[in-house]
Picture 1 (tube, helix red, strand yellow):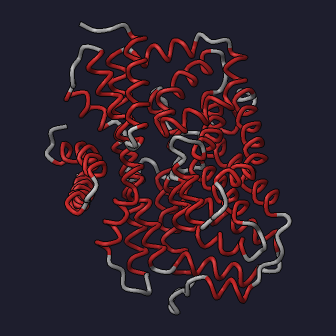
Picture 2 (picture 1 turned 90 degrees about the vertical axis):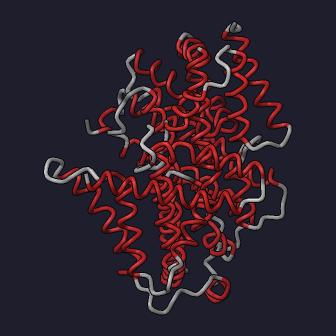
Picture 3 (picture 1 turned 30 degrees about the vertical axis):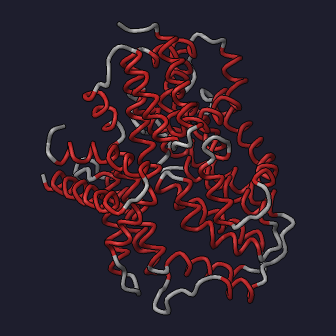
Length: 428
Length: 49
């Protein structure tokens, strides 16, 4: 016998809250909520559906792993520190150029991997040193790194919120490049210029002393070549779609990683780096797996339908006006689970009323990462605080995030409202 | 065909790394998560799904 859908939903929410209050991780809390939903919904512990749900994002997990592995190889070979040292040596007195290059360095890892945490781990620490020697306070530095790390996760080519939602509405992940790239780059630049404007020129001597040394044999070609190979593979598939086999993003990242490995001036322990990559990504891969299971059980018990119907029958003005709150809060609770659970009905609603679903989804994807600073999860916010070695209370960082967050919310909401007019950005 | 084999190798390598980390892990939450995350990899490797 099964309970009504509202009761099943309530039981899932309560189970999640209980699990969280017992200090169980967000990923496992979602899994327990799914199991509780299955039990109350009269389907017991549906092994087939758990396996089915765990499979949902396997392709994205492969992209995640290979991209992060590639970035970790580059970091271990000394490529990242070489670039950071090179940039500050050349542009320590030219603040504007330095800010643009720092933004690019912060955007790249997250854009390629789809995870803001990778940005924080790969380049965040080193950029924090540079910003610190420009006289910026730790909370301000943490706010800059957190906001840009969030935007990097939303930036193309890998934007998990857009990918997960697109998969949920059976929409190909095509046409998102410019609608995601333009707001992410513009908002990142605005963030660093607004928060860092009062910064002094870098104290070069001290900064270089604190940054790790790059291997002497490292050079720009060794850094750029793996990226070049990756972009050639990506572009080749688009230029000659009928002549080249589709190898997929994971294999492209593997090829780039192999190039990076052979060009590395230092001997790399590939097994240790790969094992650490899996360990580093466990919370993120775990989230994707558990979200898949949760969404599968929600679909099985009718809870997903209930949420979808509730969302699509809301007055559209209320939907527009509440995006600024609903999206970050859903991200804070469900992390990427917010995309398939809330993003899918929202995109269906926008599509029904004649908005451009691609641009609207891109607009939402820009707002979602803000939730990564909010409790109960706040994974990237806390990670940034630790990486920057900020001793002030966490709220100080949030205070500095406020102005960029308002700009991001305004930009994202306007993209949703005017998505039809901005449809040309999709190039479709 | 070659690409499919390469993807099986990649899946197998990641599954192997997860098993290594699972064995070394000392936290129960991490262990449960490794088992959950391993599930799709093993099912794909054994061609059960």
